[in-house]
Length: 128
Image (cartoon, rainbow, N blue to C red; front, side, top):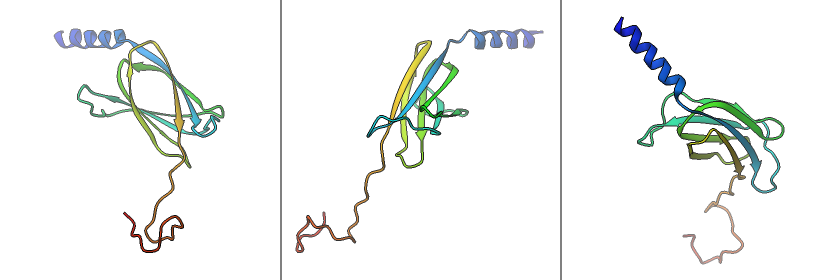
């Protein structure tokens, strides 16, 4: 009988925990246009800053939008991945019933190689 009462109390507490509706808008950093079909991945984060098990993956629509209702209050790690863009990652504090997050994705930076000729560098100068 006690086990049933404890389980019912635990279920009641889970129902009472506040949750938020989060809307995402994913844009290209260079021109502000929407990024469609980007993966928005959400993971809860514990009080020690460690990513917890479980999570949710969403995809953006043609307008770069995606949303999820039922995100528990607390720390949330958001990662955004899209073809041709740098991976975005940041932790957010979910503390209100409705949140709108705008994420701007950057293009990858060019790679520097010591094996290529660099016109701005003098012939006798060695790369740093």
